[in-house]
Each structure stands twice: as structure tokens, then as C-alpha cells.
Length: 459
Image (cartoon, rainbow, N blue to C red; front, side, top):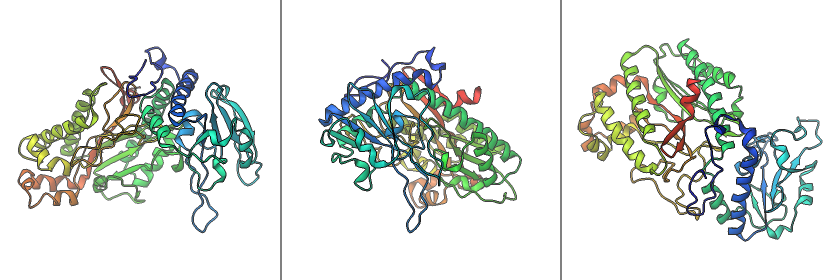
């Protein structure tokens, strides 16, 4: 079996070299069997007979009749790849086919969902309803025997179920979701392929002198996504803007000189996300060389990943590698351990090495030590690391070391023992380029990784 059945985890079905090349449809049936097993276990832990999983509903803006973009419950998307199906339910009772209560309103103001069809449909007992209230007619047991998983701002969507989002069930499901099924892996490969198309288009637009806004538009056109369909707001940062970790302002006018581009952008397939970052230099050989050093560091870190290692330990080791890179680049002086201990590396690299990815860009369960919800905190001094788990086969995660010139963080080094270790003249020379981040999505194997991002670039 793929993964390890420890601490109560229900593993995913196994992968093999032949199945790895097949698309999502070929693996959906075994994916559903894995979900059934995971939900059987969650229901047993909760003492319940049925799980009712709500897709969610649009939220209306304050003092307005306009809804925010709909974001489906990831627990619902795990069962059905229907990202735009609000007010619907998956109802699962052990030993029975999962039931999909499919909301298809009678409406002439908006486009309504088409009749349910696709590779996934044969796995479900599908019940079409035209009003949200009618969903209650399709519960297979009494509400008191069910648990409700989802967001319900008012009593209606919960269908009279009082036990909502029970901790024992969610902990079990979230911990298990760290290990991906073959279906999920196939979706994630497709998301990487789509995202790479966008990155190639964005680099070409940058080389042509486009503005941030136009680079963003080139990316969206290449991946065929609207802004609302992207898994997260694209980060498209020219020059100094690369030092703002979540820069999403998109200047409409191109700068007089486009020195560098940092683009962090992903795509979706069947609800699953990719998360890819690349950094480019337009004409500076010295900044291009620094990108090359960071590329080598990132590949070194990826090469250390395998099942059984602890990701928090790898994060700390990455800081040591960054210390060596800072010295090689002439940005710092001293040995790597001293640069780590004095906070120099943290000033240049203030975020975490990576995170789980799947139905959510920052997928749940990154700090969970077991299915009981025991939390493993990030290392002291590294609060933003989103993944502290021991890695298991078929986890999918990002690897994204960075090096930035952030005034606020660098200024904090002045007046401390760290100040003497920074080569300030070189820092000032490179500040106009903002920063560097290189990010791949990788699948953990027993003895290495499958690099979804670089495989997509190589195709």
C-alpha cells in the first residue's frame, strides 16, 4: 500500500509506473474506495452513522446583493470534481453508494448547472433537487445519527444536524488527506502542466517589456483561467516588488527598466492546485548568477526529500545551505551555523520552506503529528513554516526557498551581532532586484521525489 498505516491513517491506494501515466478518470473508482474507507473510520471515531458533506453557498457582500466568488468546501471536492456547484451535498453511509444531492435551481437570472455527467457520475446515487430545502428529503437516516461537514452560517444548510464539523472526524480526515491517491496525483500532474503553460507565457511577456498587469493577463490567457478560477491571487512582481512576499498589486504601466521578475502563480484541474514560482533576470549577469545559486540550492533541497525525513528538519538544513549561498554570493561573511544562529538567514529567507498542496494550496494537516490532532509546532524562530510532519510516500508538497532584500528585516539586523556578518554594500547593489524564489511541487517517494513541476517544464 502507498504510504504507511500508522497512527490510524487510512492510506491511499498504491501507485505503479504504469498507472502514473494514466489520467484522473482511470483512477476515480479506487479514489472513491479510499474515501469510503477514510470516512468509515471517521464515522466510527465520531460514533455516527452518516456523513453529510455540504458544498457551501455564495456569500453576499455587506449592504449589497452581489455575491463574492464561490469557493467550494474541499471535503466536498474530494468526492466530486465540481468546483461550481453550491448548495449541494455528498451524503455517505457505510455500505451504501455515496449519494450526491445535486442542486439545479429553476433560474433565468443565472446559468444553472448542467445535468450531472462525467467520469465521476457512475460512482454516485444522484438526486437532483430544485430547492435547497428539498435536500433534507434525501437523508438516509435521522439527522441525530449524522455528522455535518461544511460551513453553515444559518440553520438551513445543516438539515437539522446538530453535530457539525466534529473534531474527531475532521482530524482523522485531515491527517489522512496528506497522502494522495492515484486520482489526486493525476489531477496534480495536470495542474502542474497547465501552470507551466502560464509561466512560459509570463516569462515571454516579461522579456518583451510588459507591465505586471499585462504579464498577469498573459498568464491567465495561457492557463485559460479567470482571476476567480486561479487557486490563489497571482504574485507578479517586477524589480523591488519581488521583496514583497505576497505582492498582488499589478502595476498597469511598465517600469522604465524591468530588471527582474518574480512570478508565483498556479492553476487548477478538477479542483486540485499547482503552486509554482520562478524568478528571472532581464539583463543583469550578477543577478542571473545569484538566481543560478538559488536554483542549485533548491535542487539540492529537493534531492534530499524522501519518505521518513522530517520537513521541519529539512527547513533548518535549508537555512544552513542558504548561509553557504550568501557567503558564496558575497552577501554575508562567516560560517553557515553562525549566520543561522544570529538571524542573518532568517532576514533573507523569512518564510517556510513549503507546505502540503492538493485541494487547497496550503492543504490542511501540515502541523498534525497524528490523527488525534496532536500539533507539532514550527521550530523556534521559524513561525511561518506550514509543514512539520514526517514525510510519507505520496504526500505532495512545495519546496520554495527564497532570498529577498526586505528593508524592514535587514534593518532589524543593525545594532545586533548579525550586523557585522552582512556585506551591506552588496546588499544595497542588489536591492533593486527585489528577491528570488524558486518553487516546485513534488511528490514524495520512498527513495526520492517525482518533481511534478520540472517534469511539466521538460515535457
